[in-house]
Image (cartoon, rainbow, N blue to C red; front, side, top):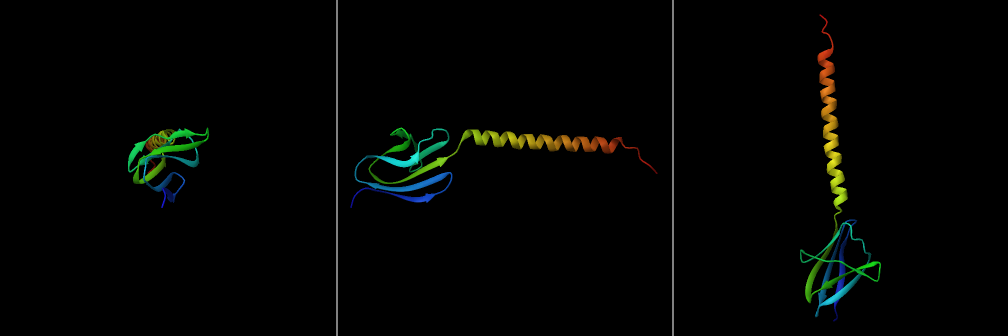
Length: 110
């Protein structure tokens, strides 16, 4: 029985592999290398992703049984989402303020 890497879970922003090897190995994954947002973890410890053959990504994997996890967590998306939430709150606050001011301005009729 040789060394193996098996894909366990494949989602848009997370990929999980199970790896068994007798010696330390370098694995090349058939996914495009993209350094803005992808992180790699071996047994929940972050490890560097290497650009391999100009377009693919690779990992140095120690001997033994390991769980390899690739997670896509781009900072730009989360910064943009935070700005969008804050702008929405500000807009709702301004609309509430304008409605309250308009309500107080109208003359009361008896």
